[in-house]
Image 1: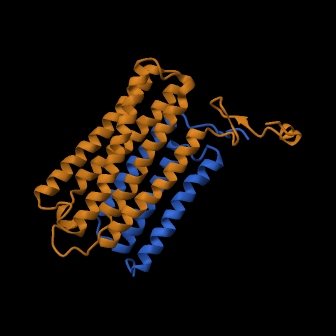
Image 2: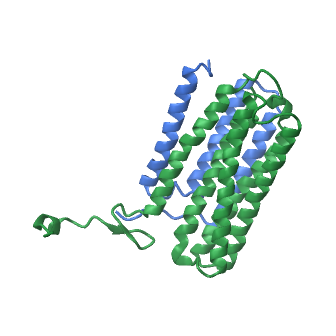
Image 3: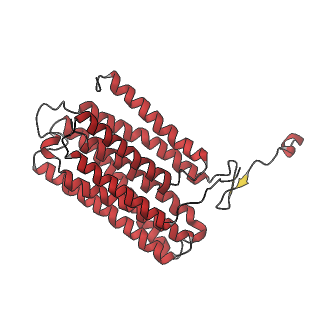
Length: 208
Length: 96
């Protein structure tokens, strides 16, 4: 196919991103995709939180949230997840200055804090089931387990991502020129943190 | 149009932000146990959650410093979700 003169004279609007590759927007496509994905995730969690609100106070039988929530325990879990955002951002800062040992330390710390949060959630779910609240018990049980369960799955996927990055770094395959990989994993990790900030407040702390 | 970046916070600033987040979380839990009016307590709790949300998104996710296209992508999804579901819940009589 012959190239037309118009095509030849089209101005080059592409520009290199901070990470070297060229895109039309000047932004990294991967980072753009992650932000678009996180925007869509707002709709997913919005639907789950709305469903919880819709069913709130409409259970015909117990246990109810007031009978079963352990606020001090969940507060500690929330604090752990919040601090994992700090260790994640310190991992990013470490790879930006090519400090690979600290990168691995902070990645592992983030994964361990995330795993502690999940362990706490498993304990919470187990104690709720022992007290008679399952996903099938009442509307509260269904909406609570689906919402917090979905969030837990997101945290678990984040932990897998972090451990993969740690492994790549250990094998010398995660160097300063791939900072963006850590940044994108960090965006996902911080997002699960901000979702929990909302869940903790509107589901646990705001009374019926 | 290159990727417009402002200067990211330093590690010390990240630690300070995390400390503020921890203090706000502690205040939220403290507020939960107070005996203020329900409306006042709920309003303050929502404001505190919003402050934490903005701090994590703005500083840890660098939304405050990154290109505005990225900010718009996320804010569009978030605002769409808020309007869509608040409208849905109001329609179903949840807040009335």
